[in-house]
Length: 220
Image (cartoon, helix red, strand yellow):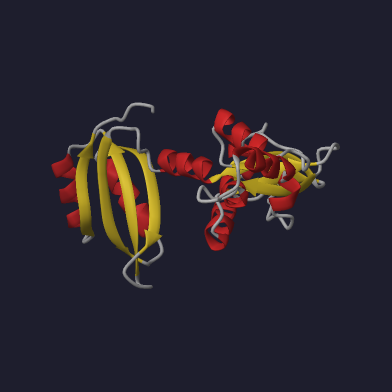
């Protein structure tokens, strides 16, 4: 899956000349936490977060008058506080690579550019939604987590056994195990009783970490 399939195609943006109080108001109205900054040609020139704007605002403990405060805030623009060296991705960046970049750089969103022009934004919320979908979090089934030896053909053996039971695999995810010799595999299966699935995995010699019946969840 690529960034272009999950990004927001029409992100809320700002120009560099916008006062920070107006930018904060825009964020609140549009319910976003960051604004890509673009020039009049739509080229990305920076990004500003809610935290950037709040840090730039005067402290509530200031002794300035209301008039002085309003004047001071009106003089500070997005250009004064934005990050200019923006980390970006393209629409063809793999989604997991975008997630890695966000985690490694401790940022919550990445502008998506094409020839330096902003065409979208991918955020941590988009990643979370994909994670929910990938693990079938809204679908009913038996959710089982097993510790699987790191050997060729093990996943095929597990999924083949589920197929023999008449089960339908709703989701499947693989994660790092206890060490390099194994992996943790989480599978959600529909159409197979919990007891039968547990017995089948134990018969294959799998270590069951967790197994539970999960009802369908409604859309938030």
